[in-house]
Image 1: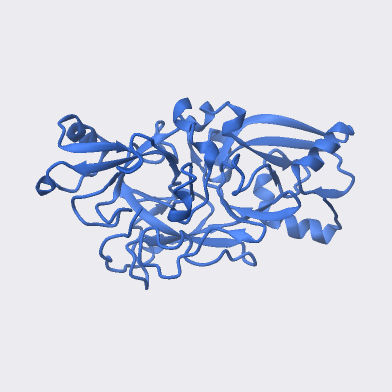
Image 2: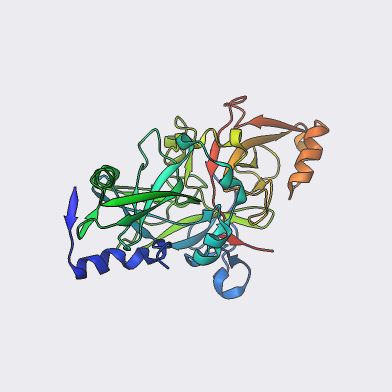
Length: 355
């Protein structure tokens, strides 16, 4: 469908997305931790994504061992419906600087069309159009930006098919850029990421603490801790059969990202020291911290089991993990013990760092 637009309607739709007109200028968490003051105010953490409105590293008035982070929402269209998403990462250093995103060089390695979504960004400033959303086997939050220029006849385009028709009619041109971005979907049509009403576990019934606030264009996620010094959110997984149990969308197209070296590693523990990790044990360990050249928000997921639980101690970096795996003191599984040897990918952007 196309939507007739007057000046007031155009400004309303564009208000939350002016930054996107870039080219025109499986378990419960551990015991609760003590609540603390808001991280943004105390300096105990720092936001590394500009769209972060507020965050707190410690639990609030809920029993689960996680904090919160509130993001600014951005609006777009898919097949005639309004969608909302967050912005976290990009393959392009200049784009990262302009829009306050995390620079992830590894995302630039993704060239295969089937591993990328399309984000159509319009030079006239209208909200972008997204090719795929959750529910599609082709969905991935990894978008390649396509620049749209020309004259659409004073109308807002809301679907990829409308763009293709305008191109065929000679009214628009589209340029495929080299910029890839990680823009996880939050709301698409009448659906949105699941909300955890109990707030007592890592997964619970969802990763949102409240339903998206579309009026104020913001959304609040659970904020989880990982070593070294990383605080992350969980938005989707390549493991489609597991996604409903994890209360997050499936992103099947991310499954092959390890094959093009666009992922980093994450290790979770299935025994050992109790803590805030997904399985109820110590927090996860990332291969590298956000901002490192080898870091990616798309994680090749591994599980670790202490061969002798009496030897368990808290580990804080990948070097310790690799040393203990090599010494056969830790058993490593692709994915989880139940999925091994089949691995999977999880999308865990890091909006906050500490330490």
